[in-house]
Image 1: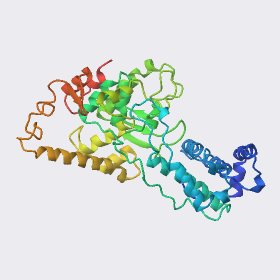
Image 2: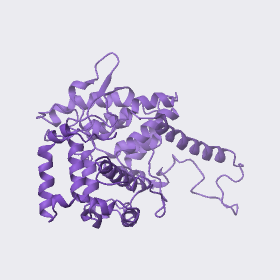
Image 3: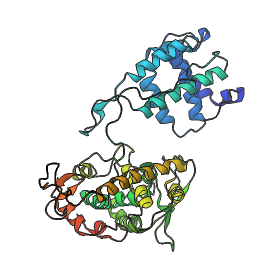
Image 4: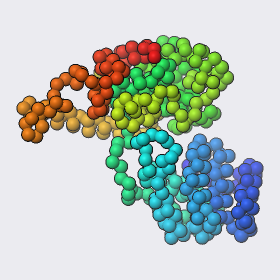
Length: 410
């Protein structure tokens, strides 16, 4: 966000929004003439930000409400809070917080320190609020300008991403019932974000065109995508077939669809970003580790870069355009992940034949010997004897050429 212009014209446009700040001031017993508090100035700034049509205003309000309004700094005057000591004391309290584990029933999410990215997002928000106050000549300096969160505790011991190999992709798709399985297949094959799929409209899907594609325009009901502009995404392979199956079932799945959405719920309403389609919770149980909906996107990007689907490795720039990454640096993360995997594969390939399948004492290691296809299927190191895994193991490895995963009706 660029610097805000605090002009008289802008204040006139935001007159209605500023009425709420007056109420907040009165409710907290503050005299406007005495000066702005952090609470009232932050609310005023957020109202201006909403008036400008900023896409992430809901997230900003949530961060402000959770990490600033609930802190003692909220009732301090701006002039008192704009000091080096007050800023560091606030950050010390922020970094000592733990994430709210009661919001989810996922057994892998336990009480833990706030993520580094959360700290950065909150600090950036407060930095912008005080920078605006500096531009408005309410304070002399911005003590948050030099505050840079660093990982000092709660270092990560688990991978944030969960990228599925081709056989695991089969098992994950089979874990979900139809027609929700087709939604997951579209997410996997198109690299689209959840918010982009939930707000995708029928008029933007061209599955019958000579070169099928869809246009991702919205990230909210009427707001732009995260990239800030529409993105044309080709439909091919698994994503194309899944989209055609879904569109054929859509009139039966959601008889009423007033907003003409591609993926509404059964009542024809827009899906919530916080909820996943039916049966998605089974995926983590099948593959044996935590799996988020956004990991479909990570898995799809990695599959294209690695050439798992059609045998042709896509360039980073090509994947960047389809995924809508703002920079190729984001796409390079998948390349680094693949390099680590290749290093492990190369090490395993160079192991002497006499040591393969045996432990350090030379004894036969039953878990490492033999073919993985004999007996129960191993999903990510966890034995799984489900029919879904056995069926996906039997079918080949090219997910773009096998449509039986999508055609099977639960």
